[in-house]
Length: 128
Image (cartoon, rainbow, N blue to C red):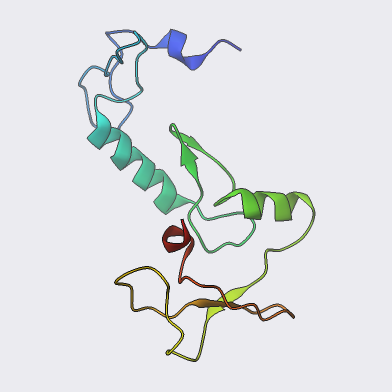
């Protein structure tokens, strides 16, 4: 199958429903699916709102360059492929153990599996 980029030209319209502007041309000469960053971000948010992870069924699916994946991330993709569920996580009941991210006041996550491992952060975003 040919690269989708070969189908877009300077006359291609933005892929966001309702927009009739022409797509953005990158400095390397390739064409985006959208007229600009704002419409690309809007389309990504709409796709995320429509889908949740096939494995954990809690988080929105990962969107990469307009392509919607079936999973929220590698952890769920690998767990699903291996026939497992990712360890369930919940917030701690002890609010004194807070997220290690500067300025965040939320409690850290605790792994509900047998290990009961207490994370240092409240979320993946603050861990990164």
